[in-house]
Amino acid sequence: MNVENTQAQMRKGILEFCILSILNQGEAYPSEILDRLKTGKLIVVEGTLYPLLTRLKNMELLTYRWEESTSGPPRKYYSITDAGKESLAALQITWNELQHAVTTVTAQQNEL
Image (cartoon, rainbow, N blue to C red; front, side, top):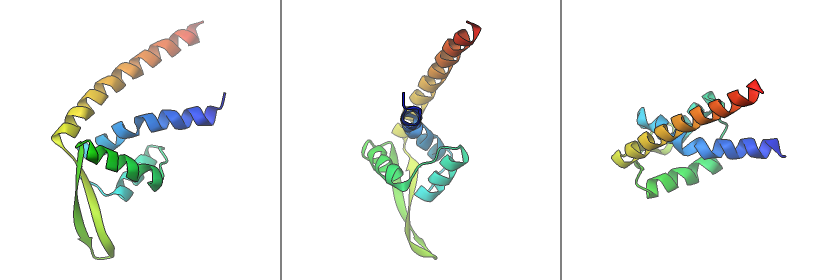
């Protein structure tokens, strides 16, 4: 078993949930999103983040606006839409159920 591959797949599976959660707290530009993910020990590269942001935007879960920057090119700020908030609520329920299920199963394993 390739543990590193499994760990990477588990992290990728929760990125959408984490990004929607971050943007539910307020708009952000990609480097801010990457910093927030890094704070939670989810190391994500831009090459992973940008396609995911585009996919979430195309699903109408996110929107963005351009803002001029005094220190460089304009920045694209992302924010969550109402549909994104509904999706986030559903993902939160799924996460809670999954977390409970995994805790229950692994606790049983530890009792054996």
